Length: 356
Image 1 (cartoon, rainbow, N blue to C red):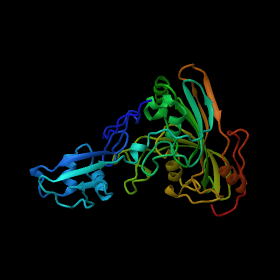
Image 2: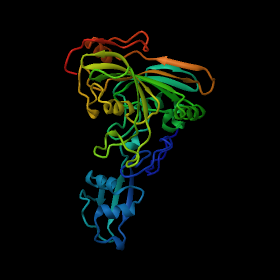
Image 3: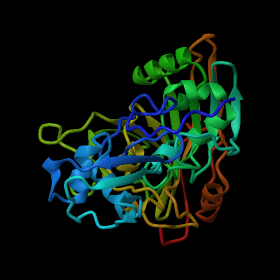
Image 4: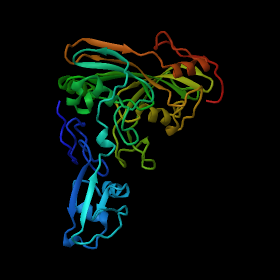
């Protein structure tokens, strides 16, 4: 296969997600670095170097160009210049090396092992481990599920987000479905929107339950105005957000904690974690939402245990159940909790160590 020419572009590369758009520092690049020769026109005489470059190389952001300058990617009359604030002169010859950004390297295949519990020509079901990011983002540009899918199936490069139709948080383990064809992807997205995909989680939460065995939480979720990394229950009359519903069922109670079954009615970012904290039962290990490490759990104690839906092509009813990961199973043992043979069994109360 011939190698593509070295081209730097602010447009999404061909196998980038369909919804990826370059903004702020999110430029995309294809191939290797490009050296670009620029002559400063008279109208930019006396301006800051970074400001002039932002006008002369408009397909890239000023922040990105400033970073390139500081990294030694710019020469003026053959000499390196590393201060974005330097004033330019009319007629100066600039040579700028446009280097690929971390995002430009994100959507590439990586041979990462995956636990595939089901696969056919239309879709696959993955048991995602805790610690794996689903989609590349700031701070996690590689080693993601998307990178693994691109390496595993060449057809994934032709699909938006490599066929990913829903996500699990980085530190949440469990079952996910991914599409392998565009027809299956469109159908799965529609099924999720119509709430025809059943997703059931197991969670270990702080505090004895003390409520009715089942509780439906209907509370809108939006971005936390005081903490940009968090989501929060919001008042839609005053804040942007979306409706969100989660059903919590008590499986077993412990002295200081509880084992819950959580069923998503909607699929908002951090939904179970936000709703659990909202009803004063933050998940064990979920420090972002008020939980604390306990019983050996240093990540949120949340596992996507069951997944079921009607196959979008064959019409067959499909269902899977993933065993608890080792850390969560050990935490249950430490607290004296066990998974009921039937999750609908009546809740029981057991003793558990304090500290959670």
